[in-house]
Length: 261
View 1 (tube, rainbow, N blue to C red):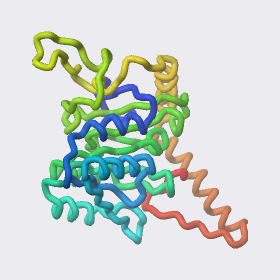
View 2: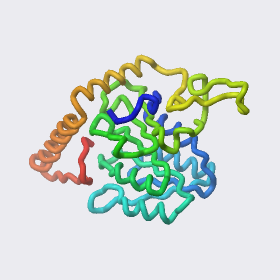
View 3: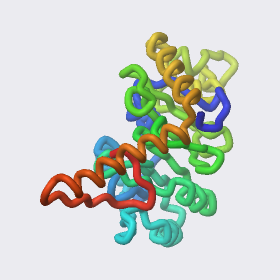
View 4: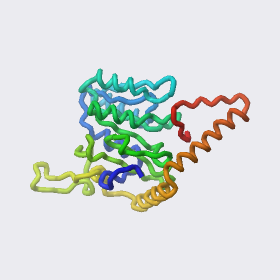
């Protein structure tokens, strides 16, 4: 569905928890900079602020293009170049919960690859609503949920970790018998397992995992291109009828590519 291999997928309780597993495992120091957008998800922003308070991390907010409402990729490139080695992470929500803009994830990924900076993509609102091709986006990690546009069970999500990315060998913030093995021959006494499984924990709902798998199969059966076309048709019909039939209504959508929001 998202063009990756099975060992790059971890089962997590929800998209936010998968995002946390990556973010809180990063070895931030005072003066490091996290780069984000004007429309970042509230929980992620709270994590930025906590890291700012606890470790002295700085947060750089990239403005949106006033003409389109999407993140200004030129400003992003300029900011990374200006910040230099202190830039430790670009964290963006693909589709914000607040306005439904579809940020240009492919272009953001290309810029991050150019500067060799990790890219964490929150795709909670996009996976299942529109095609997400990780072969084109080139993010280091992506988080998604089951309960929204995949129409699967609540309490389930997944974390994608790019095996060629910055987070593949990152040691998670905590480990258990699912993500690591005791090893007396190791200097630490344990070995973190290879692959995205290192971000999983032992206690999880297999019913939810299977339920999300069924939802993924269902979405793939219909096809993500067909799903996006149908969603866009219904959303555009609503926008048009609101303006045409509801007196005094003005639709203020932004973006070059509309989502259902």
